[in-house]
Image 1 (cartoon, rainbow, N blue to C red):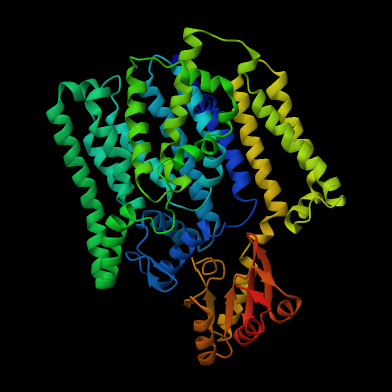
Image 2: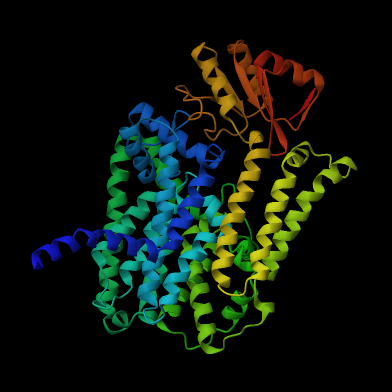
Length: 556
């Protein structure tokens, strides 16, 4: 009887454990559903996703797995770890854009799990922080949308969180795990280069302020951490040596100079003032920026800070100042700190609830509900505004086909935020997730055709197969290479004079341009036209372009 009973129970144990894990992480499954819906609503976004995919494609095409390439030239902007992960999937399932998208979803799921684990270690006496921080991270609208781009930031965020997790003590061990820290740092360096050090070195340097073991064992903390950082750098150096040996002196100069002094000191295309990140922080923290209780909780923090909050301060404040000091700025540079922002919000809300629970409805998410209602009313009013002539932009006019159902959807999203009383954080997070997926769907149905380069890429692939050379006037970030599976570089031209010279040597060639204005006569001569980000994308027989330009039929 005993044997029979134990054998009948034991098979169900793994299933029960799986069920318990599923029930313990509802935020993960909600985020996965939302991410899988959103990421397949439209194709790869130019220039973000298309550039990464094109670099991976050219490496794959050339069988050059050490030296990245873009448009036929060695590409020194990023190390290859993400590209290697893409190649791993292509080796199994063939070249396509499905695996890179699934990869980004998996990396985003890892990010949520790491934040959950970090919250458990930083706030062991407050399990609510571990339950709520992943919800907050999952619902950041900017982080959600940008995290689905085939780019390097989410992989970098995973490496940053893993590295910091190695420095935080556990219940059984106070000493840091410097071996794993070195591996995480090395992988982060292979993900996006030396910027990894800015994300993790500053929290490590401030270790004695927030880590009791580091305070007691300063010598071991700093020597062990320094050795780990050097070991991580050696992992990057090993790739650099192999890549520069293969890529030659030109690639060596581009890689070493461009990725160190050049990128940090000079902002090649993204120079902004010191205070710029403060202006974009509300966008990065949306939708929680419209929840008054969060701001009251943050304002209620008082010194002395407990260990978990000191860790977050040692991480977020120096890194934020460091990125503000660097001249080149982009909102997504702070994506690895989104987990820290979520932890700070979750911990602040938990402390506010402990110290002085406030049930005032004025601290509820009514501003977010108002924003959803305003978006809904704006969409519902769009058709009448078009009819009255107040809206004439052709892209906005395209929204009117779907303004009614999506306007009603946003109005309905405001209801649970106003009517329900319990579970404010979960309501904000779930409504935020649904809203961002809904907005992405509206973008796909209306504005995406102006961003979709697949048709023009296929036309260029057909021209390449027919032996017609292709040139691009102005910037070329590989936006057509992967989508068209091009095997030859697109010639980069920088002026109309260069186009004229190229036309003499390639009279049958095609040239891609981005004019601000197109006359009716110019439209008749172009072989392909589509709107793109407020201007036009036009492909011409090069002789027709030179003729249209000389006649003043387009504005460059």
